[in-house]
Image (cartoon, rainbow, N blue to C red; front, side):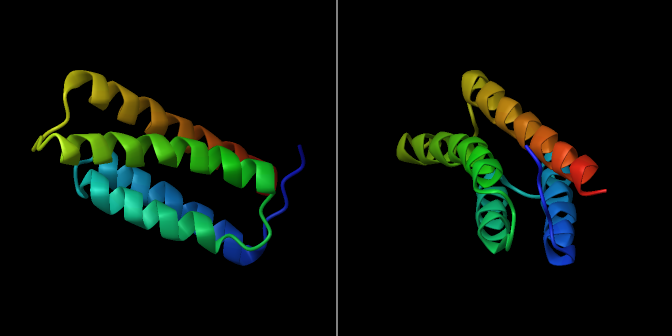
Length: 104
């Protein structure tokens, strides 16, 4: 799959990666990451629709885990939810890295 990114989209990729790093370093909360990624994913101009859908799939895991935790009144995620979030964040990192490699 050939991915084509505008210069603006390349900046969006960097911002996406930066937000993921901030979350991994506990500098932003999950709900902040979810909101930021939602905005960044929607802001891509020319990115491949299938690639964006892959991003959305990983993002939706984050959103669902957060919604369940809020619904249950949990202040913190349980171990299974943490694993799901970690897997989704890792998947997002992989998608961004592959896109950046292809965009070079």
